[in-house]
Each structure stands twice: as C-alpha cells, then as structure tokens.
Length: 421
Image 1 (tube, rainbow, N blue to C red):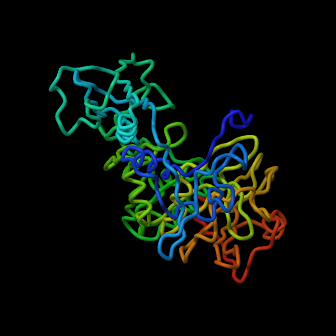
Image 2: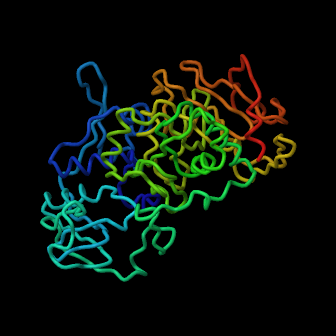
C-alpha cells in the first residue's frame, strides 16, 4: 500500500518510535532529539516521508538554546494496543516469563488506555487471582481490557519457529558450544575483521541485522584472537544485554542474556552514548562516507534502529560485501580469491538516501569493513583506504569497482587470521 501510494507513511528511527509511544502515554508532544539530523528523516532532506513530499510534516527542525534538534510529533491518541504476554491472572495482570523481550508492551498499553482506546493481550494461559508474584506482573490488569487465550500453534515465541526456546526468555542457559562456526566465506572474513575492532574488554556492543549478526558467532568461536577485548557485552536495541544475539527472523532476542529491559529504556541508554562499538550493515556508501540501508525502490525496508545507534555509538563499524548480487569468493592459503564479482557496486558517488550522515561523526571512529578492503572516515575529506586483503589486486578488485577514488596515504594488509580457520 505504501509503494502504491494508497496510504501516507513515514519512515522514522525505531528508537524515536519507541519514545513517541512513551510520550503518547504521558501526554507529551513528542521527543526532541538530535537523532536523525543530516539523514533522510531531517526535514531539510525528506522528513522521513515515503508517500509524497506534500504529505504532512511530522518531523520539525527546532532550536533549543544553541542546539539544532528534531521534534517528532507524537500522535494525539493511540486507539488500540494489540499485545502478547505469557500468563494472565483473572484480574488481567500480565507476566512475560516465557517471552524473549519486553519491547514497548507496557508503554503501548498505557498509551492506548490513556487515549481512551482498547488494550487487548494474547496469552498462552490464564491463572487464578493472586497467582502472579507482584514483581512478575509487567502489565497491570487495571489497564487491560481484553484477554485472548491462544492455542500453542497460534502463540509462537518469535517469527522463526513455533517452538519455545527457554534460552531466549532466560529460563535456561544454552551451551555456547552448540553455536556452529561460520563457514569460510566472505561473511566470516568480514565478521572476523569487525570483531578485531572491538578494542577494550567488557565493551558494550550492538550488532545490526544481516551480516553484522555474524560478529556474535565469531566472538564465540574466535574470541581468543582478540583477548584484549574479551569478554564483551553484546546488546540489542530491542532490549537484551549480554549473551549471544540471535539473527534472521529471531533478530532482537539473545540466547543467555544477562538482563532484559523495555526497548525505550535501552534506547535511552544508547542515546546517552552507552554503546562502545556498533557493527552495522551497509548497502551503499558514498565518497563522503554517508551510508544507505533504507531505500531500494520498490522495496521499503525501513531504517529500524540504525539511525539511533549509528549517531550515538562511540565507535561505528559498517560491514558488508564489496559488491552484491552474485559475488563468489574462496579462501586458500590464507588469501582471498575472487571468483565472480557481484552485479551491483556498493561504493557510489552519491547514496540514494542518507541513513547514516557522515556529518554526524563528530570525532568518533567510523570504519567500513568488506571482505577485501577496509576504509575509515576522514571527517571533511571522505573515505580513506587503510587495508586490503592478501591476494587482492588493489586496482582491479578495489579501485576499478568504486565510483570515486578514496584517499590512500598508507595501505596495509588485513589481518591474516581473518582468512584462516
């Protein structure tokens, strides 16, 4: 419906959406934040509009003291909240003991209730009044209107499978040895090199969806290659910290998490600079260092938490293959061999949409890791090529496949450990 322009739609950061829900519950006008400045959600760019430039403005540039910030309008009402939990008692109190995450469930319930709307919660069972210990009730029955008891086949824990996994809810801990190593391909090389960029022990790390997910696996299987940075605390914007984040359709949850918190609370922590290193995907990169992961017509993938994280993490490592759509490589003798290039270039003169604005670096280290080359952002100048893979011809395999020429004052070889088992 969005692509067909049948509805007006906006694409704004996940963390901002989370805070909008909270502000709707509190009757506030909406978050005022630097998140989104310089990106496509900035009203000086596109204002996050997906349907038409003429649709209503919901993102506004405002001046607060000496700072330019963005104000995201909260809706006046939330008419309904459709939620899920594990157990409801006869008073409507809801517990989450078998859920992988809290997400924004409580704030959504409060927003709908305070708007005069309806709160409907799906659960797997109902128990007697007083059965739930006070500290386990996440949503109070006073703001719940309807309970729906769903049979197991309609109450999946996550999109990936209907089978319950207690290591995601925190009920049990799964053995780390059960995590299979990555196959020896470009994804393993990229994840391994990104893992080596975690530069201090006990760092709090966020991993994006897609290729960054492999960093969690490599930390488990090859963490001994980076002892100065181990152990680390992997986290997700959805609200888990510690353990090993999951990927694919289960993205956002974590096996063996140390703690779970509501999404809005985790975003507060992220916005304050709580993430030491963020490993995020990249689909397009331009000569200024801007990154696009959100605009590929006719698809509208959205930006998720990418903007919230990339603008606030102390160090950002963007990861992705050098070309896409059919790339084939193999590793032999600790060298990278490119058998077939992808059909699409990623390093463009100008990205189609700015999901990360290089102007927001503000002195932070910003790196770009591929299977054959590593770049860093030099603020005000653009990308600098700093490493190439052993076995790679810099001219043929790197420069000839870029729409611009990077800075190259000193290029060294990528760590050979990335190309071996």
